[in-house]
Image (cartoon, rainbow, N blue to C red; front, side):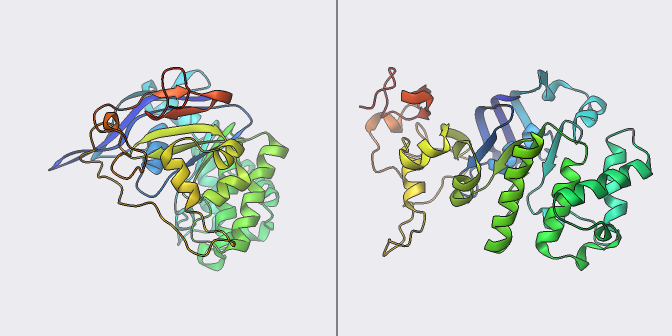
Length: 319
């Protein structure tokens, strides 16, 4: 359904280009929930904005291809792209609880969004949004409310209802459970899974919360320093991580049986000046001399896992 090929999204500055997304390739299959994980600053949200062509100056898309249902989104003019947004591919933005206009009732801003991206009349748009509010567990009375009259979880459900209102085939959710309490997080994760199971929505779920990925996604990509370093089935990623960064990321998850919490040593490098060679070598306990010189290629190893690491040779076997 979605294929991203060597996407690069940079931000201009007086010091040079910040290479926030620097050669990302991945694919999302129809009907799956695909996760993108990684620590803050690795380029997850910029990747999403690049896919949807929401990058604004000083950011720009340096190169790459984004195929959605056979069309390269980066080559479409704005009018054709506008017809695809929301009707075929929709977006739950990061900080979506604050994405609602505080001075407009939910009905007005929801129907405006649907009318902008379709040929619906206002009455038709209202009827659809009432129906979708029911799907996400909200009463129709919410339409007459202002955002400040709703709880955080209710505002998030409103955003989800608007995102699925035109029955898109792909929904991209960027940190949809951030800043919510754990009870609301659990209910929203169940809602997202139900959307896939009951309505056939393909979902791209972006979050730094590894526990949320474990509960929700079928397959996932791990990002570090503007690149994807590992892709695989979620169960394989958690029970048998292959890339050193993935191993350390999972080992840093708090567990009840752990007496102490261990983080990843060092700090992430700056996108203004990525390290030469493997970008993780400055923090990697398994780093070799080759890691400081050559950037590793993405290799397929046993079971279809994709890993970019010099610990694996061309055959995909670990050294």
